[in-house]
Amino acid sequence: MVVDVLIEVPKGGFVKRELSEQGFQVDYVSPLPSPFNYGCIPGKEAADGDDQDIIVMGPRLRAGTRLRGEVVAVVRFVDAGLPDDKWVVSRGPLQDGERRALHRFFRVYALARRALNLRQGLRGATEFKGLGPPPG
Image 1 (cartoon, rainbow, N blue to C red):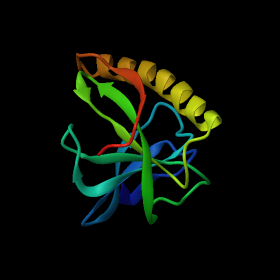
Image 2 (cartoon, one colour):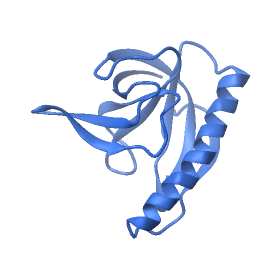
Image 3 (spheres, helix red, strand yellow):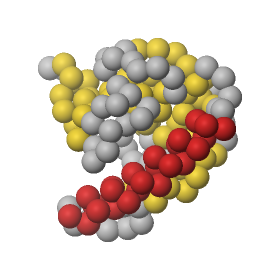
């Protein structure tokens, strides 16, 4: 499946910015820097009601970059009891090192996110459930 992507967090970044009528606005500050480019598919609603989350493998891209890419996998994630999957875009099949990096990051991210959710009074499981095949 080929999708149109908007990068919101460059690789190495902490701050997620969403595009609004006023330009990019800070939406979220991550407890960990993102080792991947992170963005969304504008207008494609995910299970949590937000635009579908996307991870773009490869070199660092600037916030605001738009691109088309092939979805090659899905990070299965649950946040405060709600599905929060992230689709993975890559120029080719994921390499073993990329799979390991996704597993490592999302296991640690789940712990950090769980702590943030508890501080915010959010209940429900927060966990990384593994990598799955692309949607569709």
